[in-house]
Each structure stands twice: as structure tokens, then as C-alpha cells.
View (tube, rainbow, N blue to C red):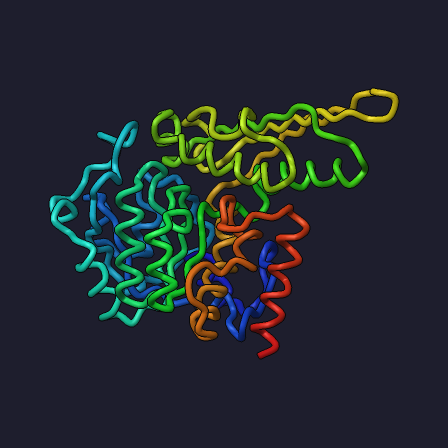
Length: 340
């Protein structure tokens, strides 16, 4: 939201935004028409205020004018569990909200794209929003690790109804997974096989608080391993994912990656990298692409998973690819819809 507001206000390109135009749409063309949550402290607030209301740790970078969009109750289901219990107080109405309620609201406001940013582990709730989107004919972006693209019957509904689907599990614009897979591809391009690797992540926002519960973090571990597998290694036993909640860090995320490779004459090569990044804006760099891809896919009558864009945008797409291949496919998609 802050990114769209800043682009509209200043009319200038921002660092980290790959494309000014995708299919004729600028980042500033994004309009917010509805918002759903289960948090008692957010329901009824203007969206501009809700996105920076605790327990959210996101940092305000620019003033955002009131949108006129009030946060409404969404379906609770399994959305709050583990370490989030007691931190987020569910609104009573969220216990009664249904898929049809969300679908009817999406239709009423004329939504084009629904972005799902629910906590990891909320499988039922994520899939409920996906069903609401497909019933309303609204393109769906699954930014969570919970299976939508990888849930065959649900993904088939998007194909059958002619609705675009993007997912699963949004990559940060330049995050741990992107850096890790790029390093692996670089080593392999030099004939240096990876013999050992790990990726450790800590942060201080509610995402990391939720992921500190192993039961809730299982999906995130699965999708990160999927991305490493697509990069060309056997990641079945690789430790890659969230490793702790450190409140002091707030919306900062710290990632530590180690890659060990075998080189000429059985010599060894080891890379140890530490990266620190503000988590929410890092996700925004990808979302501003995904939203415009979803919109243009609908305009081009795309149905189901938009595979040629998803390998670059998501950790666990339907069809994975190494970093360079995913980027090449994504650029080809953007060129095709922008040329039209």
C-alpha cells in the first residue's frame, strides 16, 4: 500500500521495482477495494491504519491517506493457532463469516485480484479465500506456503472457471530463497557440485512468531526445500527455513546461508553469507509484480496456474525452475502482455 501511494504521489520509479509497466499497468494504478482480517483490533479500521496497527511490525515509510476501505471480518477457521493465540484476538464475527460472504463482497466491490497473506499453517483459511476468489471470478495470489496450486481439486476449479491462479508461497524480492538458489546455480554453472548447505532465518515480526511453532512452520520448510530442489540439488534433508523469533529485530529478517562445494582435485569451496533485510518491503517488491501479472492474465483469458510467471515469483510453483530460467520465463511473460 505504501509503495502504490508513493508512486502515485511522486510519479517516480522506485528502487526494487523491476518494471514500470506490466501490461500497461503501473504500480500506482493499484486500488484497494476490500480487506479482510480476523483481528478484533483491526476490523472496522481504515485499511491505511490497519496495515501499521500492532501486532503488525511493519514500519511506516510514507504517510498514506485514508482509503475509505474498512477492514471486514474474514473466516477464522484455523487462521490463528500456536504462538498467535493470545497475541491476536479473533473478532466474534470472524467465527461466522463464510466463503460465500467473502465471494459476495468481492463481487460487490468489483475486485480483480485477491492477495492472500494469512499465517503459515492456516490451510483451511487459505483455501477458503481461494474458493471465495474462484466463485467470484477473481484472480488469486497465494502468498502463503499452504497448498492451493498444489491442491489438485482446488486448482482445477480455477482452470474450469477460467480464473487465473498464482502460487504457492511468495518469494521475497531478494530474500533468502532467491539468494540461496542463485548461489547454487552459480556453483553448478562452474561445475562445482554442492555437497552440503543450510539456510537459517530469524526475525521479529508476527510471521516469525507464528513460525517459531514447529507445527505451523512445517509448510514453510516444505516450500523452501521445493525451491532448492528446483535449483538442482537434493534438498530432502537440508535445513532451510525459520529458526527463531527475536522480538528485538521487529520487521528485520536475518538470514545465514552456508554452501559447501567440491572443486578441482577434491579441493573444497565454502561460502558463508549473512543477509539482513526489512521483511515487509522485500515482499512488496514481488507483490507489485504478481498483482499486475494476475490482472493481465485475467485480461488474456488465462485459466488456472500462470506457470511462466510463477517459477520466478513463488517458492513452490506448480512447475519449478532454476533462478535464471524462472527469470527468463517471467521476462518473456511481461514482454508478451506489455507488447499487446
